[in-house]
Length: 165
Image 1 (cartoon, one colour):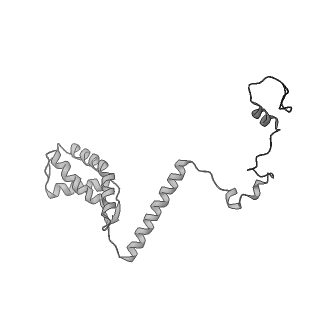
Image 2: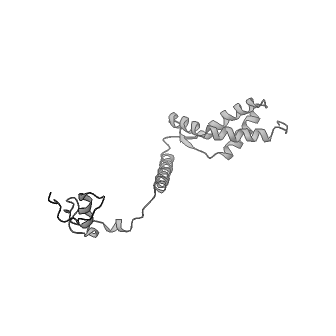
Image 3: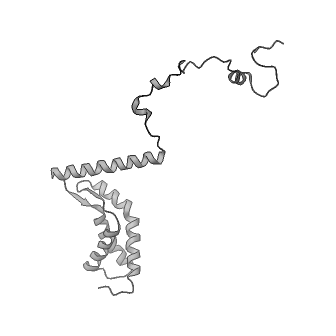
């Protein structure tokens, strides 16, 4: 039986004839690749100096861009005076302070609730949203509720031995 692939050496190998042709360079050129290897012409001057980013770096850059965009929107809306903003964490702190004081059977008067809520506001970063955007306010409250409960609970536990007023 004659050898169909005359370009392949007759040494025994576990590689197929197709792989051997690729190794020896006797295969046809890939039609999808350009024949000329002048890739520099395809790359613009801007992209030659571009930095490669990891997935985490890209996510961080996108997050920073989104934050900057929100700040710009906030400042523009402030200039327009067409919409008012509210700190959603303030609402959350007041609601959570009352719950935590009640859970630990502490004084739940307006003064104690206000003091505990102020502590929570000082510990948890503010998040502003338009008053008209109730969905966004609710989302912010849900996202920060665990942190607020933890913060206020720690404060109440530390203050248990002290008098309520």
